Image 1 (tube, rainbow, N blue to C red):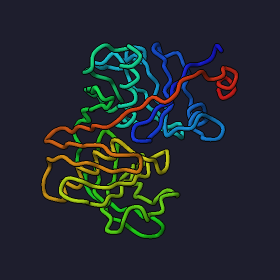
Image 2 (cartoon, rainbow, N blue to C red):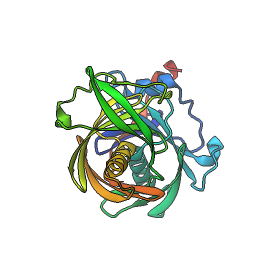
Image 3 (cartoon, rainbow, N blue to C red):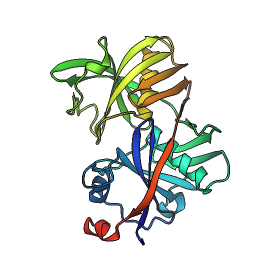
Length: 274
């Protein structure tokens, strides 16, 4: 066909278009990313993962490969926990890396990863830092929350009613003085000492079926509210289940990663969006 290679994948139904671009030759504009992610005029996705060598972008990293992540609206994001897992799955399946444990670069820093025999991936997510409190408003109802930084900003609110009843179709209000670059908003039900249920409205995307950094933030916030800073929990999201471990100075996220399709973008379509 003679086009631009792409893959489609997801981690707990948080879905991505992957663009293999080892030497950083693609001009990845906001318009192109937004069109790719549009579910009517493009392929449809929650974000785009460009697979590029760290050196090609001039990024300082111990890892050869850098995950250049863009939100569905075309904006650049620091990190995506579900995206990392899909990124890793492609690197291993395609033979771009031969090991099962290695390091990849992200804008939130290097992330050590491990791919398991069943296709699931564990990501060292770095520290989940509690940074304060704030309030979000959903359909006129305020919810207090714990602010957490996992390389990107989050606000986690514990909800008494089932999170399934929340209307997250529109962007909830938040304090732009506290979050000048926007924020990922998690709403959780505590199901026990080591389990919780979550929905999320992602910055630059809207509600998604899952958010990897959001699950880490949710567990960190729940532990903080319980008076501790270490523990492990399962997190049920609309797209499936992941396991999060929080420890002093670090955290891990383990969950599935799937590659579902591959093909080529039409070069004239791509050029028309330049």
